[in-house]
Image (tube, rainbow, N blue to C red):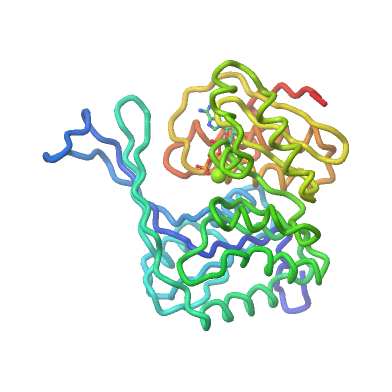
Length: 324
Ligand SMILES: Nc1ncnc2c1ncn2[C@@H]1O[C@H](COP(=O)(O)OP(=O)(O)OP(=O)(O)O)[C@@H](O)[C@H]1O
Ligand SMILES: [Mg+2]
């Protein structure tokens, strides 16, 4: 705590393209071109970094979610309701709304808006907020898609800023933002947390098909390939197949016992939060991976984008084994 009572966040998240998530169950099969009736609608502040910060906050650790959002935006109110400690940067534009429809069989259909462009002035304001928030932090998590108007290598530039003040960086991204991070060489982040789709995107490997046959080799090779690009630790999340951690000390796979799935929304973010919390606690790689999978698994048993408490995560039995 600083002399003025400001608690230095240990894990800072940066969500360039946050959203107000709205979701609802569909009472029957989807009828295209016809009226569909929804069950109870939930609405929550979201965007990947917001969810990571929510989990860190629930674990009792100081965090700050840097979010481009105006004070009067419904997302700002939702952030206050969710209780996520945030640094809201006014940008003069409305945050997007993302819609998730849960089908009777548990599958989720998502409708994501692209988000309004971030102007150069908006980007400068967000970077200023980052400079002001970083000193003293342990980790910066750069999370989610980049809105229109931002350079594809923005996460690489933000990684440079964090490095200059000794803050480690995790990136959870997809598309051109992920490609740029993977090609960044010495400017690469310390950790990335791709899911199966993202691993396939950057490596071109048929990971999903291999996993369906119980084969972890493609996912393992993909994680090692990414490490060869200069990324110290690759936390590859594999949905119901758990996760792989490839780092300097080796490669581990972790899997939980099957659970009753309620909502997969936020599982990847919860897994990253668990991983970073374990890093901050000084745990070894196997324990870091165990915590990540426990958080991800606990998250899928909770409704909407609700995040687990440390107790809920600790209740999940996880098997970890070294595979390389
Ligand atoms: N169906 C499932 N059953 C059990 N655990 C799951 C399931 N889906 C996800 N998990 C857990 O959550 C973690 C993250 O899930 P996943 O790989 O689907 O992330 P993601 O696709 O990045 O999710 P997000 O939508 O939050 O971005 C997994 O490593 C696993 O531990
Ligand atoms: Mg993800």
